[in-house]
Image (cartoon, rainbow over all chains, first blue to last red; front, side, top):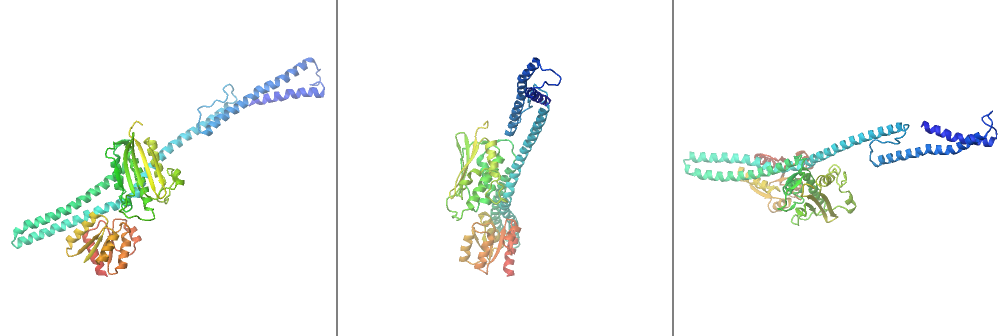
Length: 382
Length: 118
């Protein structure tokens, strides 16, 4: 900066002195006689001043240009390493230092924000999975209560029937008719077996629901070869309460589908979202077509080229064309905000595209329905 | 006693029918898997008590019992529910409610109470 001021003074002083000489016609400084030497010095000054000025001034546009290029880069989002504005000069060192301090701070803030963002994203995925189970919890409880009712009722009645049988046996003994006893026991045994078979079925039903619930709890941060058909069946089991009166799904699962490397927990969550959305789209239809009509919800799996495909198709109300671009946007929802977070399809998209290297897309028409397709690569190295 | 059971899970419907029959063999028990079938049945053969599940297709058990009691004032309705009891109470105030899982004996007592109280 000091050099700049000196330069400016020189540049402006020499022509000013020259002008004074020429206009005033008086020797200057006072008492000094005008000579040809003065003229030469003056002439040299006139030539030297613009040259010196140009040299000094040229550095500043260059400095400004470098500074601007650096700041433009920062504005675009790339933070450069250490910046050197003018390596040959020491007077820009202060400016450079300040700039580098700012860049360092920005860099560390950005790093911090990126880490935080990563953590938040993981937390959103975790909490939305918990939320998914929460949404389903009431239905799952109901689905468990039905077989539980069977078990409780049967346990009580089996005991009553056994007590009754014992009474009849005693009566037969007291009446001196022991020959009746085998027939009594046989009748009781058949009845008890009947009750037990009902109990067993109910227990199997409860076990299937609980297994499906456990699979939802799986954190599974590592891709494992997964039976997509089994995963779909688990999700169908866990969402039964939601679809049973609306649209029992028609499963068209390819029996020859190979195991697909994937994050099963995320996939389950995504499939739950697609099934619940489909059921809501069907439930929102104005007329309730009889249950005997063609299935309105179909889930299918198949292979195409080196991809495994899962399709969830509903004949529900469909998505209006003007919303198609926003379907995968985070926080976009057409449902009551207390009901839909607007995150589920965004999470599904992030999971399939970013973490599985696959794709998820849909076709939808109002009044016709919606078809969602998930494509997962069979090759784990992709 | 003539009883109509309405439950959309066939396994539970059969379980309740046969277990009530085992404990009170003298009762006549009809079954229906949907509100539509229940209304058809009751229009064909009147009953004393209807025991209905809450989560039924077409209409919920509360609305079914309201419709039945409206059409057949002598018939008593009882709800059997696997849902949250408080929510069901709010949805159908004043209704007799039994919560799954309940003992078959409790079911039978509730049915007898419904008939005796009236």
